[in-house]
Image (cartoon, rainbow, N blue to C red; front, top):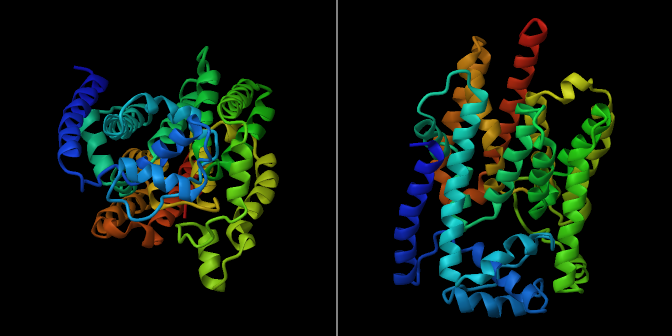
Length: 388
């Protein structure tokens, strides 16, 4: 039986159990907290109401989730509504079940696919992939809350396939479609968008950018056609951004150290990163820009410099995490093996803190630091530069 069929059957079995529990236990919260936000906001968008109004949104949310105590506000841009609008054709419990199972499928398939692509001789991909997912802490928050993260994780996986199969006939379009899925949380991928533009310029190939722009315009058209005022509603909501969020981002760290809730503090690392990112990327060679390790580094750096990044958002770094583990296995460099072991150990330790994920800010930075060091070591090994 193929890996995908096995994952699919596993997800169906989990879905049957999950749905029965969901219908029998009104207090069950697994996979509902954030999904009810997406479902309710999309419901308002489809029916011509303001999905960003907290008072109206709360009235809809408690219809689907009666035990909810306060509103869960929608902060995602209107790009998200055409993507999740299909769920509105299903009752809430069935839609939540499908999304929960789809998240499991995406997580397991991503880990198995990356093991297959990055490893020279992968064996027992499903079992190894499941183990990797279980030892990657952000997946717990993602599944517990019903987060939208697996959607753009699938997008990142599709984008990375353009590095694995550069000569594929539809690879560029496939990668552009993957980038479009990241628009559900575009603030996480600003540096990645810039990187792909510079990379396309170096390659003199614009299929990825053209596909990305075309699909972005399509999403804008659909969201506006259903609710013409949706973008003005979104702009109004952003006049009072959630500066009080304590997320795992440099912006939140600045808010904490300066003891002030300032938009400048929140977005300063992003602005600095984009400014110097242009200079840095333009100075790279085409060979480096088209390498898979460099793409991994850019994705991680893009998330790290975003104004808001919750630990469950770091689930998008699952391909990078798998890449680190594969590099540790394939390279004789002791430093890489120690770094990878340290990263795995940090995940195991962090499992004890999973109920308070929003507070252990230290975890995501371990991924970033370890990935950067592994990239340096692998590049040094390939170029013959002495390693330290």
